[in-house]
Length: 139
Image 1 (tube, helix red, strand yellow):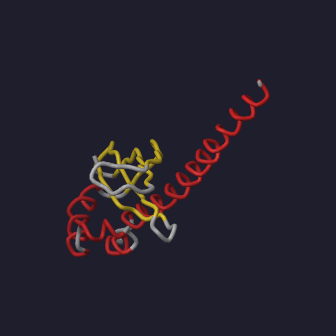
Image 2 (tube, one colour; image 1 turned 30 degrees about the vertical axis):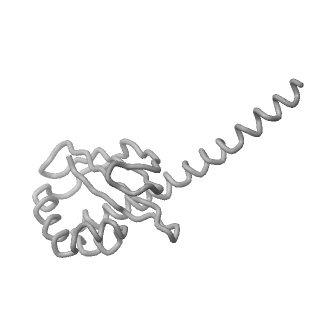
């Protein structure tokens, strides 16, 4: 009886282990997507950042408005002096967004004209399996 219970316990744990491994892989892929995406913003390639964003992002804001907003927000901050990962958290549900696979990535960022900022970049996994940014905020 104890052997059966032990086997059942192990069988119940294995799916959790594989989900955890999958989440960890997703976090790494999403973090890479976020890092590449902010590099576009860092270099002033705001149109390209919109082009590489997720469909819901592009639906929420037209490309010219995105470029204008980024000009108004990012340019006054100046160049990025440093950016370090603060956190990267996998989620399947976010407020105001459809259920899916997301990773909320936060960076501690120091700009030329703002000594301490938190950038939040939220990549989402598309139907094609590609991680694309669906949200970006600076605080």
